[in-house]
Length: 282
Image 1 (spheres, helix red, strand yellow):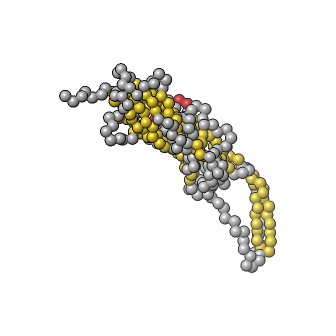
Image 2 (cartoon, rainbow, N blue to C red):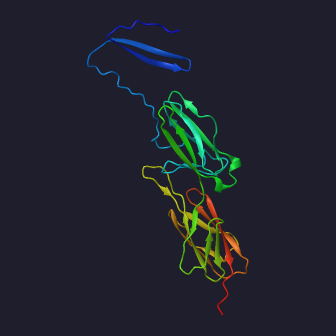
Image 3 (cartoon, rainbow, N blue to C red):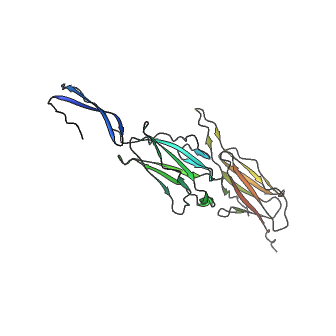
């Protein structure tokens, strides 16, 4: 039951909350004479939260990296997880937003843990092992945090870390082809025929004041296919590789070339198939 107090005109009553828990409030009540032309407490409650603070991963994060755009690149591995903290003076609503056609490959490991003393909440996100079998279905996921008091929200995008992107460079007179869906390059079975592939790899910063950027890729032909050679490794975020057939082979003949991102260490494998040369014109 509350306590009644007598309120007099021309006095200022200030209630200061000193301690709070779900069932009890402790307050100090200050009574002072009213003074003309004195500014009252200018405090205005903030209903927003630190949406603009750069995302920083906490200890315990594994296989995760924050890009320069504040997005998370996460290895599609059962051991991958990341932890981050978001400050707010209200309990945030949270949800994982999956794209249509995507596996639900992420989940919150447990209910977010709120730190009452610092008004911040710790979130732990992990992969779902059973959903990692088809990397092509691991579409970007949005972690959406919404402040119910203000309606403000923050979206954090999470991408499955993938190997370098590979496309073909069209060259006049070339008979080589590339199927991006099956990641298959086809080269005419004729001495010194080539195909040029454009490779784009991830870049990562060490976060220092003067950052060191790690990027580029390497290329390796599968063992036993000495008939195919590949040009030098690319040290920039994107560049071209030339695959060269040294001498015609007995068909059918095929091999693979693996392109590996220097920054993420994730690989993309391209199958290389030789096709019969066209019959000479009569």
